[in-house]
Amino acid sequence: MRIFLAGAGGVIGRRLTPLLRAAGHVVIGTTRSSDKATAIAALGAEPVVVDVFDAAALTRAMIAAAPDVVIHQLTDLPFAPGTPQYAEGLARNSRLRVEGSRNLAAAARAAGVKRLIAQSIAFIYASAPGLRIESDPLNGDPAMAATVTGVKALEEATLAMPEGVVLRYGYLYGPATWYDAPAKPPSVHVDAAAQAALLAVTKGAPGIYNIAEDDGYAASDKAKRELGFDASFRIKP
Figure 1 (cartoon, rainbow, N blue to C red):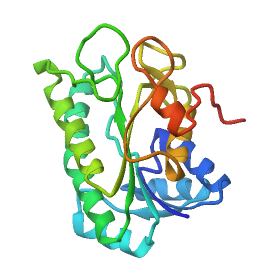
Figure 2 (figure 1 turned 135 degrees about the horizontal axis):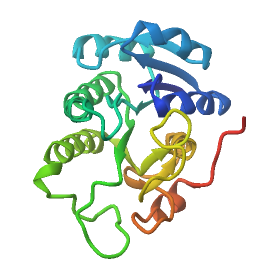
Figure 3 (figure 1 turned 180 degrees about the horizontal axis):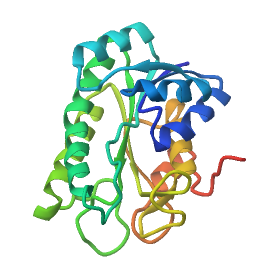
């Protein structure tokens, strides 16, 4: 299959591209930075330099790529929690989720794509006892308003597609992430997160899936059952 991977140069994108190629897929990987194009090509993808905020250019790139599936792994969080620039990054990331997701879904529809798989977050649920499941309400804390607004926009744009699949990831840890080991629940290794996206290319009904370890916060039973998700998956060196 032909896979349009938006955000191929990102933390998950760099782990996901080789998995997609090993599974026999052709990967068209996007980046907004021409500096990353060579690295994306080295992973086995066909690099495309395009800004997701440029709706017309994105649509042209999508139609030219003629993908079977689109995977949304776009984020804009270059600064870790606790740094002076973190709040600024959250605002940019929220804009990316709102405007970028809308543009990506529109471009996918223009190219005749049905299946859109998108990266969301599993640490967005309202406080409650027990494990959080996909139908539970989201956090209503005003301090989380910008993040929740972005997540809702991303998920609505994805689920409006004929085959929209939302992967709610736990806090990522592992290579090139902010954490070497699980920092707090819900967590998921970046390799397991990447494999979940690979599995969703051909498996799973449209809908939302928690992608996290069994650490007492979010239940990933649906992803295990329908996608074959395995939180212990790691890419061999």
